[in-house]
Length: 441
Image 1 (cartoon, one colour):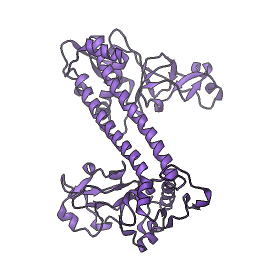
Image 2 (tube, helix red, strand yellow):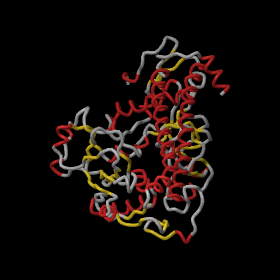
Image 3 (tube, helix red, strand yellow):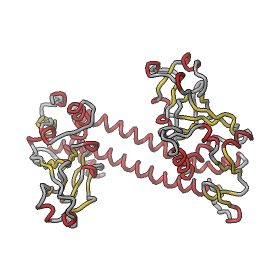
Image 4 (cartoon, rainbow, N blue to C red):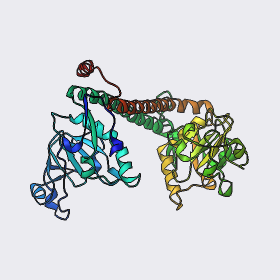
């Protein structure tokens, strides 16, 4: 565990967890006995350690179940640590008296040495490196012995611990507030899409009568709108290009990727609703020009159609183009007839996504080929001004969501930096001032 030990200031200490905690795990009453699960005693599973605080449990056991198993009571404010499998390293602070299963390690603390909020962040800071050291990056399994022997650095001043934990907690609260705001914006976007894209609601907020609507493959739409298959939009010149990336031998291999060059776009690169060029793999321009198809340009609408199906975005600010993998199709439009923003948002519509999922599952590879894509149905106003009025309110909310997600990434970067500096003593705080500000907040 030497690699987990930091050089710390002289007024700090570094001790293994067992120095200030007698850790213990729980147990699982016999599942076949229903009476063991008919009580009101909280019982925590490792899968529940997702948030910082745990207030309630999914399951409860009886006094008899407690007696007939190795489950033990855990007092509030105890740190709970998941030890096995996919949840290994997940941590919560328990806020109600409970019991746990055997995959959860309870870490009660000596409050005269360390405070639980501070230890929570130290364990969060150590966990990824701890899993890598003990498992080499494979399926993680931790243990009581590993956790007990994990070195924790801490100020001997409880006030300084409180100040450090308080700052990190404030960033966590800011992240949570933005995440909740995103959820609210996503609900608003969904409502706008359901009403504006069906035409049930006009852009001015007024409602259309039932006589103006008819039933389509995706639900109601306006009778005066165009309702047809993708191949019809190609025939009528709305869509002037439809193509995915190179298959087979033409497909670039990993040895050809470079640090700077033409972005080589996979489904994951458009999963956020925009083209994440920074994370794209790259190929040289010379290699790109040897490819036959898949040159996506500014204004093209991208749709992922293989493995991860249904991601969509508009290509923007690329020079001169990006290359597509066989996972992604571009739709090139005559923007005098169909604006990219309308097609992108139509692709995002819930009923369209459900149809995509159904088509993809007809293939063993979760795949929708170009031929199948051309058979998909779509509806749209046959007037780009009306198209723009329909999607403008949705775009505004979408932009807010993107900005909020960017803010979360910035907050997470800030938190990581703070943890690296505050939890190692590299940066010291004006403890009295910080704790006063935290109390007033």
